[in-house]
Length: 358
Image 1: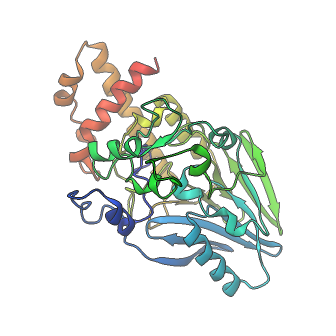
Image 2 (image 1 turned 120 degrees about the vertical axis):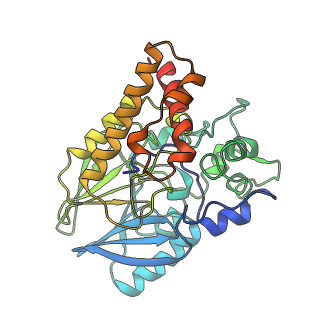
């Protein structure tokens, strides 16, 4: 499984990414991201997914209305609202569950604000309170000015093309005065703050259906919610355990930006175990073109544990990072996607993570 992806490239689809990429930047490798296009697909029972390229939302149709997880963007949300009205007349979106606060999954909620109550993990309020938010992909406030600057998004992208950071459009599209940066308020202008927040777990009952909201811990995000549709025995989770690198298989090395998005490796492992303990048959993602299983979760955790052990042992032997780049081959995972490109970044990320979180 690709499960442990950390810093995903925050783009709204390959076509958008190519249009926004700096001049002279080569396109992503073929098949790296899902192609553009929108559709709605049935999962099980009353559960569906809808996609915008390789970005997915989930929604459950109940007798009292629809429960939607994520909205992606203003344009997509408008399209989805029209589709839902046509396919399920008389059933408005009653709740929007927000998987986390990252803009490529959370924007567009205002489209449903006329009928919906918004729910999210309590850390979302911290990320949307006017301070520089916690972001993935090694996007951090490098100049400590409290603003979201183009360079802070674009430099990680240029350093590791298509794996980290984001293109400048993620900032300039929100920059009202054209100074190449956005205030947190500008950045979150198209994201609705949750009306209801929870800490660790929450049960939602709607139209005879039971839905469980679970905070796995700090991994790709620090405000994530995994959504367990109890009656359909399906778990929907976004960016953790699978990010935009995942298509038809979760056996894919993590992009390992940050390193590991500024959260301890032990916390990532704990997050895996939290999801593994839930009662489900299908694992659905905000990325990934097919349904996965609990075994995919297990394999992702095992990779993370293996990487931690290998790097920790090398550190204890007194190896330098330069030596580890050569000595740690991670051969057990040489058949996983992105092995050749991401073996060394994963070693580097684990090394710096273990140095920081001792």
